[in-house]
Image 1 (cartoon, helix red, strand yellow):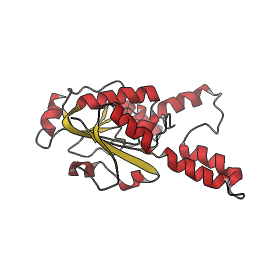
Image 2 (cartoon, rainbow, N blue to C red):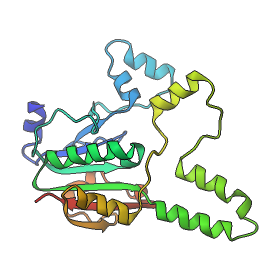
Image 3 (cartoon, one colour):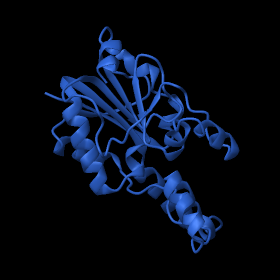
Image 4 (cartoon, rainbow, N blue to C red):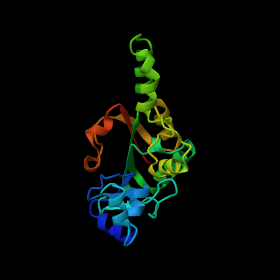
Length: 224
């Protein structure tokens, strides 16, 4: 990790949490996906990934879980970014992740997060349920778009293991007021809603993607 800090020292240390396949230079990119761990397994990992048609992970993506904590020093990060990550962890794990994120930031460091907007989906459901032609499928669309619940049988132990490995389901949803409050609760100052392109630090441009904002909210705060 010392080498990572030295590598990023010139431009500051920027941490991308739950990076997925977006792992640009200039950022230290972590993800806890099982397929990334598998891909990094010596000798057999890459072969297994090809067999299961897993994602082509960039070499700059590192294995790490923000809930359990990362092997980086406290107060070392200028920027931390998390796009569509926080909704995939339980409420209890969310608080653990936020505590870790806050501890890794330098004073003045900025955390920017994007999550699906619960309020958007509720409004859409409410509109459809009031429409006689759309109402029969309103609940189905709500569940599918929210990525919660299960349409297929879960009796098969293999299916359950696959679900656990993929971790694609949303475990806790947020709207703007609740996420804003959570930022404040964890000590962040200057908390505010953001839109794509209104970066308080231009380095966010490397990890931030416009398509991530569809039906979503973005909130930013800094550490004093």
